[in-house]
Length: 438
Image (cartoon, rainbow, N blue to C red):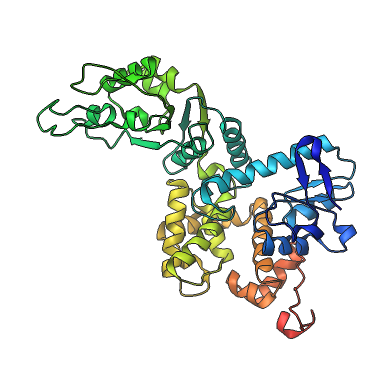
């Protein structure tokens, strides 16, 4: 089956044709017609087109939809779905994939873009918000705690704006020495002051026809705030020692870890500049507010660290997963990435155990892990985690148990308790019942 939506500018490719196409954005399947289950089809697509979203079309019914989503489907639609509805679904999925891949170069890469990966409502809201502003050149104020990925969001907005061919200039407002701040921002001419042996362009002019990102903008002094406001109003800058203004054109993005309105009330931030910056606001959620995204991100960072460090650490044990979810992550995604890199460095086996994690994470687990274990939400996460490990080893129970850091008997109890059914995938010349697949 191939569904053509030419009038809407969308073409979806069936499972039987996907291997004939070099570039695939989305795959639409009907498992019953193909005589295979969704999990098997999903594995096949991962081999040829990793990261491509798969939409399952099947009979109406909640159980069928849940089963498809558990098997890795990006969405589930009924045969009565209209072309317009299908268009909306496909555009959303393709756009969400583009958000991650536009910075990482690969939808499954855990490098740039990983902060936006996640299944939690907060992560989805963030992606949708970025999508809304991706092609706009509006000024955006990005707020959030340290380590949440504010610079990543700014970089993504730049790369999808009209000035993407221009420079992306990051100004660390809290790191510029006060004595050099004006010169660093606005530049100076030769001989403007003692030691000015050459002219300096300045970061504002360096962002011409590109994007200027003011990181931690709330740390700017009131004097610099006034001069920055004038640059924004006049769309020109006068270097120190110069007699004429130099026109400049750039998109402005800014970030803050402290609500700027609070700084305005305290009299340390100009109200008029605040309204210049906060034309549109994006709030980047903390990792502790993103439900179980920490485990998904940890698995991505695990892949990256294993390659970078040249180790064969393939999975995270159940005990380590519980510890990661129990921890509060005050340093957010940045702290999580550092913790996983440390754990991979010290890991002695092909899986991360709880003892491999930094002591602070182990300590949190010991004080709150049991309460977390009784949380009914953990069952859903544990099911997804075990299913992902089973799929990664083609259903081999012995290998899955080893990667999870548990014995086979415990694994079988968990499979029964969580109603997990990932059948072993036979290799060529090996029957499903052969002992090699068990």
